[in-house]
Length: 82
Image 1 (cartoon, helix red, strand yellow):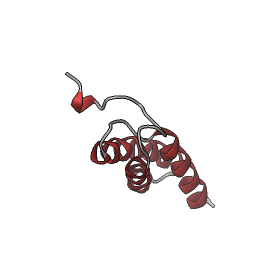
Image 2: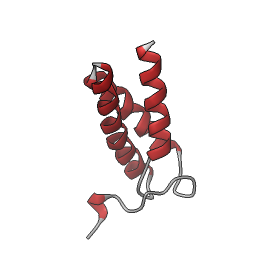
Image 3: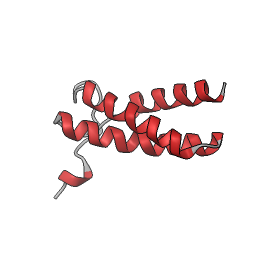
């Protein structure tokens, strides 16, 4: 049951937060970072932050790569700002 709750939470979080940038690479990278952070936090609550970070990072990177800036846009990534 914990695994299903964790996976559902990570998936919804990643889809809701991914990603910043205009290129597929930027969006995958930022989505992965956001997903890993959210997954680690959720995993910490459920007892396994490492697995949570890995699952969240993978889902976030996938969501970031599969969406475009017209669907979800969190702005310019930190590494692209001057």
